[in-house]
Image (cartoon, rainbow over all chains, first blue to last red; front, top):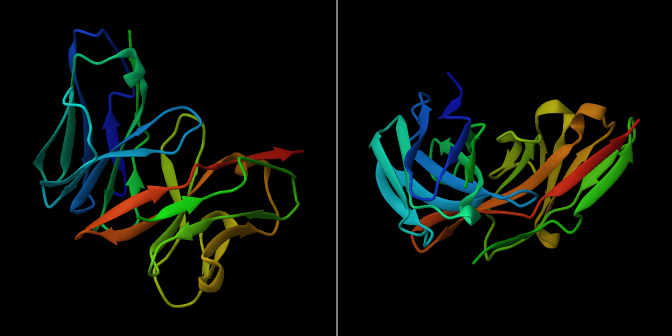
Amino acid sequence: DTEVTQTPKHLVMGMTNKKSLKCEQHMGHRAMYWYKQKAKKPPELMFVYSYEKLSINESVPSRFSPECPNSSLLNLHLHALQPEDSALYLCASSQAVQGSYTFGSGTRLTVV
Amino acid sequence: AQSVTQPDIHITVSEGASLELRCNYSYGATPYLFWYVQSPGQGLQLLLKYFSGDTLVQGIKGFEAEFKRSQSSFNLRKPSVHWSDAAEYFCAVVAASGGSYIPTFGRGTSLIVHP
């Protein structure tokens, strides 16, 4: 298995909703990432987990809450989002934090 | 902190023509260098990477890139472009910073292929 699987592919949520994005990989990668990507822009790093511990938090608002339950899973819990949070959320993994990334196809999030 | 510059926002080429996408980086040492491609609405796919050794690296889909330390560049090339190569291309560096490795992406270059 050489893929990163993200669910759901599309999500529409209201500003008072709570939802979660899920990411799964079975490549034995020990680093996992959440990125946010706006249209026509590069991915922006949000969080890095290394060996299931949060190692980087790029000053992301607390309405985004990451969780790494085990070495294969990464969640992003969403609460009280704003319309400007609408974006493509990408999960990625790598064998080491300095290695090349395998990206999932993303979750297209729309906040209404 | 490291930075990545992709000076071309758009590149237009004819199918069958050669292609070069430019990437310059700023970092005190040699970082780990990557090129990724993204089709609309999709995730990013790794084309090739440079860690050390031979400065000309081969990737998937017929792409290659050359690391030039003196110019702090890692330009992506393809001798003959296919219509399916139309996509967004991102150069990225991963460099050590304060005990962590921080990935940085360039702003991307949009490749348009004319028939």
